[in-house]
Structure formats: structure tokens, C-alpha cells
Length: 94
Image (cartoon, rainbow, N blue to C red):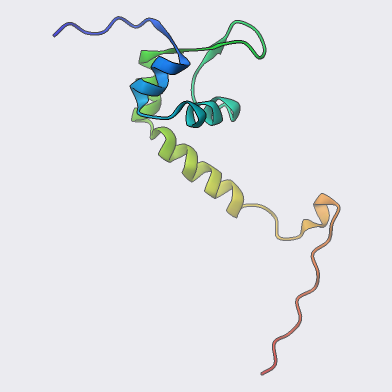
């Protein structure tokens, strides 16, 4: 079987190629978690098959989800850095 030509593909084809829904692919592009190009800001997204294959080999969406979870875990507990201090927890009765 001949190897596929590494051509630019649109978001519909990329989503099908990766087995994702278009909204899931859009979330990945919005967070810059997947390689893509745009003609202009807010323009149509284009993907290279070879870059999508590399992204998938590197962990793909699973790595993206793990990265989001790690980022959520690493948030500082003292939210005063965000302008809203956390309430002081009450001690539980012994």
C-alpha cells in the first residue's frame, strides 16, 4: 500500500483522521495543544498528517489531558495571589 502524501488537511479531515469530534479538535487548537497552522488569526485551521502522527505518538490528547490535570493540581492553594483570599478552615471537633 502506498504511503499517504503529507498534505495539508482541514479540520473535518483531521478530526476524522484522529478519531475526534470537531468540537474536541477545536478545544485542542484553542489551547494550542495540537500542531496546526492558520492563514490568519481566526482563520481556517490546517493540519499536516505527519505532525498529527508525531503528536499522537507523543501521547496525543491523553498527554494533553494529563497536562491539564497536572496544571490544575499545581495551582497555589493560597488564592490571595488571585485577589480573593481563601477562607481559613475551621478546626473540626475532636
